[in-house]
Amino acid sequence: MPKNKSSEKEKAYGRLLDLILRGEISSDEPLAERRLAESLGIGRTPVREAIKDLVREGVLEAHPTRGTFVRPLTLRDVQEIYQVRYAIEGLAAFLAAERGPTPTLSDYASRFRNVIADPSQASVAEVYDHGAEFHLEIFRCAGNRNLLEIYRPIRLRFRIALGIPRHHRPDRVFESVREHLEILEAIEAGDGEQAQKLMCDHLHRGLEVRTRLFQSRGDYAPTAVPMPNG
Image (cartoon, rainbow, N blue to C red; front, side, top):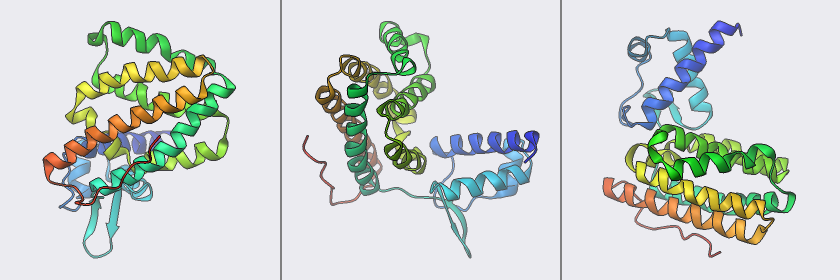
């Protein structure tokens, strides 16, 4: 694909995903390709390609007769993905501590401390994005390619659920910075068990926040899926 076409597709993908994350596209209405292209100021072809990518990633779902929709998520979906995150991210934190941090992972310490000292210096979006990259870097640091291959598609598929606090609970985004720093300090200290525990505690808090948000919308499963005890 030529470079300019690729960049237009990436632009369409990013803008479309942002609309979805902000809740500006209803899951009850099919996506109108022409209207999206006009509102985004991007050609229909890159918009069409971005939609196809989001369908492949599970963010959107296509129905042959009804059209393409934002994939609805229930609380049960979120709970189940957190069960998986609890297992693989806890293990990744443990392995990262056993191996020792990469320079890239250690670089996050100063970022986290700066935000803690002065939260006004960074936007919610910046803090959220740094946190997401921090989680990914822990997997790289763990040195287990299989774990990383499991994690990447999971994070892509559930970007909407994982990004909910960014738009509805920005205070939680900033609270997580201190938790990220504690996880990093345990990794740097080589304490695998503590790193694993802190990661699991961090994920529990994240699930609790998303649970309350889903319940406030009335969009949740009546039967909760229990998290493992750690």
